[in-house]
Amino acid sequence: MEVPEFKTREEAKAALDRLDEELIDGKITEEEYRAKKAAIERQIELMDLEDMLIEGKITEEEYRKAKASLLGKVQSSPPGPEEASEVAQKISQIASKLADVREKREKLRDLLISREISEPTFQKLDSEYEEKQNSLELKIKELEEEARNRLKEIEQKLEEIKLMREEIKARHLLGEMSDGEFRRRDEELAKQAERLSKERDSISSALKLAGLEGRESH
Image (cartoon, rainbow, N blue to C red; front, side):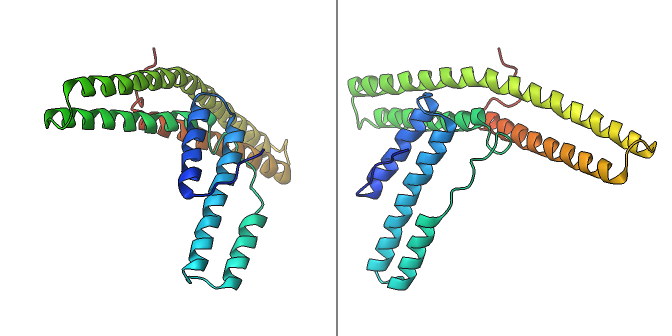
């Protein structure tokens, strides 16, 4: 996946912002998003290293080692859904942008009240922000239903795992299963439950960030 070279941090940071928009709009997958974001952030880190070298904060040898480590760093496997649920990621991204738009609309009203801008200017800019806010709110509502459905699935699976662990424990105590087999299967089930619990927590946190926690979807 090709990522362009950036001449300045501003260009790189602007590319990160565009990347967030592409993820929210569904133009790229979560996997593509993570890969591109890592590549851009790596470029920013290289720029920081070069500045530190120029400013004499690190030696040439330290620079070469840090650069080699950065470029040779093996990308870790993308986190599974239990660690960073895709729907949770999207909701968090949109919620952050939504908060930013709402804050800008408030500042715009303050500018009007203080008479730093005229009514026509306020109306024009506020209309633009309102349109963006409505669009983001619509997207987050669509994702909310998906998130709540996934939470229901997770709770069902966690209950199934709980019952399975109870069953194998009973079979073990009844002598139908060896100690080794019981431990192996119980550990596997425990890991599955842990992954699902992490995914559930990531989705719940995203809903809380978006102000949707504890609210029934319609």
